[in-house]
Length: 111
Image 1 (cartoon, rainbow, N blue to C red):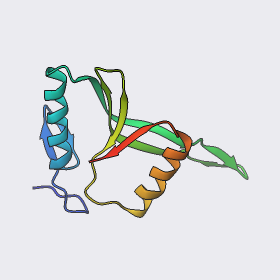
Image 2 (image 1 turned 90 degrees about the vertical axis):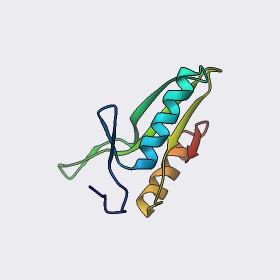
Image 3 (image 1 turned 120 degrees about the vertical axis):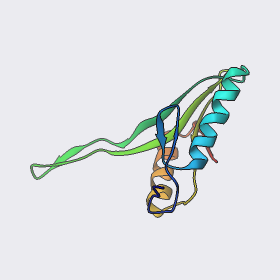
């Protein structure tokens, strides 16, 4: 068994390695909802840029990004960004705030 630093067990479904069993289970739920017509489509690991990269005194500073577990498009046209969380780290809390500030109309949900 492979565990992350927060004791989440890596899980493989459909040849995809998920960071936790909880995330893999949610993926399976989304697949069922898509088969049932509730979900039109979904994307895994969508990256949002929170701050572009830049140069400071000649040194390159990388962009600050947030990677959502899922972006889900429902049959009614609604789009929701979903993060499957076990542990809410300080870095996660900060990046979540920056994401919501940058995208104030975003529908965001933690599972």
